[in-house]
Length: 493
Ligand SMILES: Nc1ncnc2c1ncn2[C@@H]1O[C@H](COP(=O)(O)OP(=O)(O)OP(=O)(O)O)[C@@H](O)[C@H]1O
Ligand SMILES: [Mg+2]
Image (cartoon, rainbow, N blue to C red):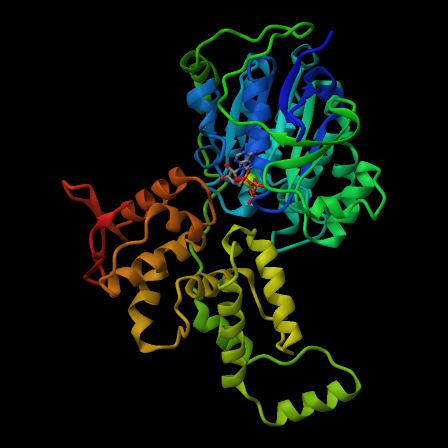
């Protein structure tokens, strides 16, 4: 007996199904570059299978919280609970078979990893009588199971990787079926990727990822080129739950409301979303609440400090002719030139389309490589300094040393790193008396496709007194920065 959902269709219009029962036993790996349609695919899978199987979504971007409205998932805001509470929530999710979205977008990356790890471990530790089948969907899985050490702390990496390995390697017996999506296969820990037997491969540019994808699909390297030519929303599927041979799938639309039936799988609980929320949350605070995933105080270095620290720094360990060059440079340091070179790199990166949709780890690596290529030392570089410099560059602040930006940079010390780029963009518009960019543009700068996140960002900045958003009766929005006494021109948002 099977319970299948239709995930999409072939270019010839034949439906492609995913057998959910088989999927529970054999897991799924989705790969594709940013914008290839992975999150859309996951959403389609979740929506179609919502009536069939319990679902747990680890959602680093807050992309899936809208499942709550249509499908009754309980949204758990990871930033609102301590470690013990997250573990208790996870235990109740198993007990009550609740479908949930763990939204981690309010947390810093280290905390996202620790929170997800705690949560997954507690799902894993449920008593045997609660080993009901559940899909555990992890978007941006390379973040939780990185192949190599990155900017995160070793502890966060260790616990998160262990939890993901557990999920993928040992979860099945406990009813937990990992469905993971990643932008880059090469960045995902190999043992985590290796446990999936089903694949959906979307558009992939980099050779290294393409080759790994082709290997997983059992395709010849020559054939692999077609992975590069896939369009948005198009994937090659293979695996026991999908197809015995690689098939091209155009992923179907979302919120189609098509519901499947559930032969062979136990019916889901019938509690309403409200009741379920109550069941999960009642008496959660029985232990003193500790802020175990605290938000760190915002770091204060800006692009200027970043550039100076690099400028003051030595060159990379050199050999031969490089060593002589180094001596020469030591003799006559050119900090101003180095500073300009760093700023030029930041500006060049910021002018690339889609750059904001890359993870900050990817961007920082890219930045380090570019610095090395220019002979700039990266030893003293830190990711936070980079993020702040990059945010300024995104807002078109080409020379952060210009006196003009002094007040703005002072004010920006109170803005968290991830909110800086949109903050700078709005501030610039206000300083120039220009209209505030619309939500689509703010979303692009913020690196999200969700207008809801932009709204939350504006709310957050407003709550902190950094911005005042005003909408007049004709629906036009203007944004003021009270500390600087500037306001954007009113315009429809
Ligand atoms: N099959 C599809 N049909 C219609 N629209 C789609 C489809 N796939 C993706 N899209 C749209 O394309 C955009 C990018 O897709 P999505 O957010 O799923 O990409 P992604 O691979 O998750 O990117 P990232 O790695 O940056 O998160 C979204 O606006 C999405 O709605
Ligand atoms: Mg996505």
